[in-house]
Amino acid sequence: MRLPRFNLATASLAGTAIVERALLGATTFAVTILLGRCGGPAELGLFSIFFPLLFIAIAVQESLITAPYTVYSANHTDAQARRGYLGGVLTHTLLLSFVTTGAFAVGAAAMFAIGKSQFAWVSAALGVAAPFILLREFARRVVYAELNPMAAVAISGSVSLLQLAMMAALHWNGNLNAASCFAAMGASSAIVGGFWFVMNRRLIQFRNAPAAAAFRQNWSLGSWSVATQIGEIVRTQMFPWLLAIVANDATAGLFGACAIVAALPTPLHVALSNILLPQFARELKERGPAGADGLMWQATGWLSGVMAVYFAIIVATSAWIVPAIYGADYQGTQHALIVLTLAQVFAGASLPAARALFVLHRPEQVFYAHLVGIVINLTLGVAFVHSWGITGAAYATLAGAVFKACLGLWWYLVEARRQLKEQGMGELRPHAFGGIGVTEAALEETA
Image 1 (spheres, rainbow, N blue to C red):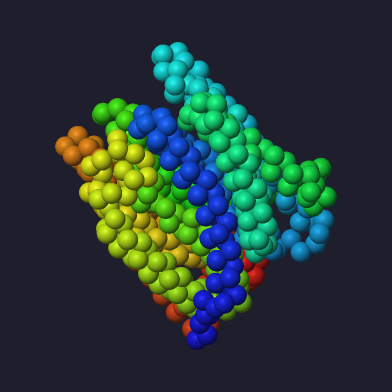
Image 2 (tube, helix red, strand yellow):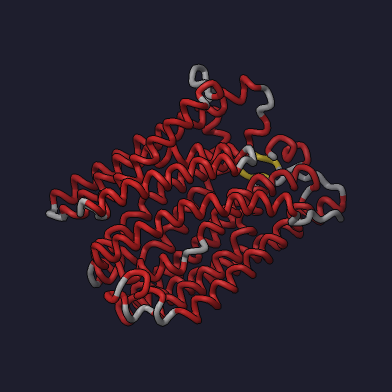
C-alpha cells in the first residue's frame, strides 16, 4: 500500500492557499473591528445577520459550479472543449447572480414595507454587490482548479487592498456602516473580477457552450453538496438571527464578535479545502482509495494540531481579547468565546474527511452529518438562548459541531474501508450515486 506524504510540494500549495484566504479573512476582520468600534454592537449585529446570506449564494456556486468544475475540468483536454466548459459554468454563475440579486431586492422591499429601513438598506447593498462577489469567487476557484494558488493570491490581494482603501475613505467621511461595507466589497470585487474576465476572455467560449449538459453533470455531483453547505451555514449562522429575535441587534453583535474571533482560523479551513479537493481527486486517480486515505489522515492530523494550539491561545487570552479588539461594550464574552473556539476545533478536524467523501462520490453522507448537526442546534438552540443568551448559543453550536464531526469521520471510515477492501480484492463493482459509477474507469473520467 503506497501512502502519499503531505510533502513540501503539497505544503507549499497549502501555505500559498492559506496566505490567499488570510488576505480576505484579514479584510473581513478589519471590517468587523471598524464596525464594532465605530458603529457599536448594533451595527456589527446587522453585519453578522446579513453576511451569512451572502455565504448561501457562494455555497450554491461552490457546490453546483466551481467544485464540480474542479473535478471534471481535467476531462476536457481539448482546448476548444475546455473553453466551452468554462463558458458553460460561467453562464451558471451569471444566472445565479441574477437570482441572488432578485432575492435581496425582494428582501429589501419587504423590509422597507414593514419599516425596517436599516435592514432594507443592507439587503439592497448586498443585492448590488453579490454578482461581483460571485464573479470574484468564480475566478478564485478556477485558478485553484489549475493548482495555481499564486494567481488566487493576486486576485484576493488586489480585492483586499481596494476594499481597505474604500473602507478607509468611508470611515474618514463618517459613512462606514454595514451597508457601505457590503458596497465596498462589491465595488472592489467588480474591479478585480472584471479585470480577470478581460484578461482570460480568450479562454472562455459562450457561443455553443454546453451549459445545460454541464449543469446536469455538475448537479449529479453537487446536489448533495449544496444541501450540505447551506445546512452548515444554517447550523453555524442561525444564532445571530435567533438572538436578534429573542433579544436585540446589540446582543447579536456580542455573539458575532465572539464568533468572529473564534473563527479566525477559518482561512486555514477554506484554504485547505480549496487545495484538498483537487489533491484528493488526483490521489484517487493515480493511487486509488489508499492514496486518498493517507492524504486525508495526514491533513486531519495537521489541521487538528493547529486548531488545538489556537484553542490554547484563546483560553489563555479569553478574559480580555474580545474587549481589546472591539471595545469596552463587549465585556462578559469570555465563556462564550472559549466554547465557540472549541466548536471550531471539531469543525477543523472533520473538514478533510468531508472533502474526501465528496471526491469518493458520497456527499450524501456529509449532508446527513450536517443535518444531524442542524437538528441538534435547533433542538438545543432555542431553549439555551432563552436561558443563557450568547453563552447558551455557544453551547448549542458546540453540540452541533461535535455530533457533525463524529458522524462525518465515522461515515468516512466505513466508506474508505469498503473501497480499500474492493481495491485489494480487485473488484470493480460500481457504486451508484447520481448516475456516476465509482469504478476504475469512472475514476479516470471524474478525477
